[in-house]
Image (cartoon, rainbow, N blue to C red; front, side, top):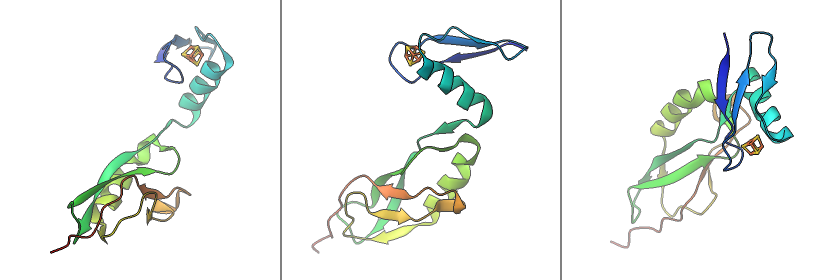
Length: 118
Ligand code: SF4
């Protein structure tokens, strides 16, 4: 069955097709071809979420994966992030979970959170 993709590598958003013989067409540049080859083999995405903060000026802090993660592991990673509680202060790019689920990817904070002064 023919598969359709919209390339997300640049704002052009080329429509790329893969036919039954795995012939790829519709890409404008090689980055688009590589994107679809990766999507067929091992689709990956950057993950963003939030984790809980103790004794901070905010009770949650945004975080992201250090690199893109397998799409089919996203929910499992979010469950791991949901288990975490970190004491403030939180530093920018502080590693919150090292090598999450042994995927070779860290979860890192993307905001500084100071301690609650109370
Ligand atoms: S195929 Fe190339 S030009 Fe088209 S969206 Fe992808 S990166 Fe951009």
